Amino acid sequence: MELRIEGLSKTYPGGVRALSGVSLTIGAGIFGLLGPNGAGKSTLMRILATLQEADEGSAWLDGLDVLRDKEGVRRVLGYLPQEFGLYPKVAAATLLDHFARLKGISGGSERRALVEALLRQTNLWDARNQRLGAFSGGMKQRFGIAQALIGDPKLIIVDEPTAGLDPEERVRFHNLLGEIGEQVIVILSTHIVGDVSDLCRQMAVIHKGQVLATGDPLQLASELRGRIWQTTAGRAEAEQYRERLTVISARMNAGRRLVRVYAEERPGSEFEAVEPEVEDVYFSAVRRES
Image (cartoon, rainbow, N blue to C red; front, side, top):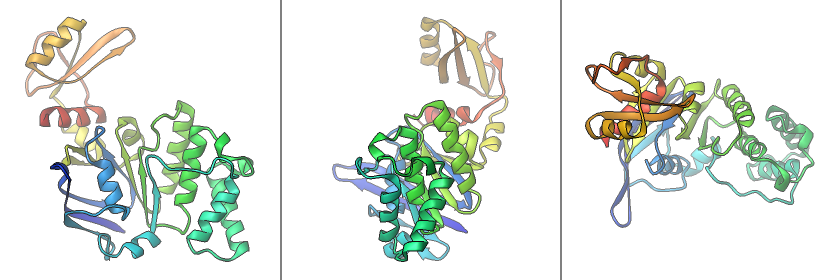
């Protein structure tokens, strides 16, 4: 199973170029599409989900023309957008049954079995008769995955699924995605590095509509070995470093400000080489491009 994207471009009215020649090859498993807000991730997801037209390029899913055979794509697609509306006064099982009808599952017993299986899989069975308006953010996201799984999709797209979730719900959602991603292609679009670090064996960094890096997250991190340096610094010092070095992150840790920079050689005696992380892959790619 493979999704092949070649030269995909999209420019909005006013000249805003959202995608510029994006090419990716994505196999079965969870693929992380990592980039800041406004990088073009959602545009790419909407194009693949047949909700938006591309200006140039092609996309093929195992011989299926994604850009032209929209009905064919929708039959094998599960989609959880960044924001999706739910009927707050409708019970979870009732709405999931409705979605199953829309997907063409007409038999009542077949739908009942499917709804129960999906609600159990997403750990929502005990809340099946609860109105969706009373669901927590994490429960809504798990319901979103349940509806995306209707019809045994080959391709599942999830756009910023963990934004706003508390740590417990985030872990639960990660476990659910991990189970799903063993059999199908799952594209996880996010700006949260931890989502990719925890879940993905392949990833791409996208910024300003362009793919800056792609590959195994751990391999990409190892390629930065010897070029990531860290020191502690005060606020004024950190600003001075920004003026002359490629600072990839500056954050507080246990009351200290840790400054990490990308440099081919040791940038100063106060810096020590550190083991690169996936976060360094992301930030170094984006900072160097900027």
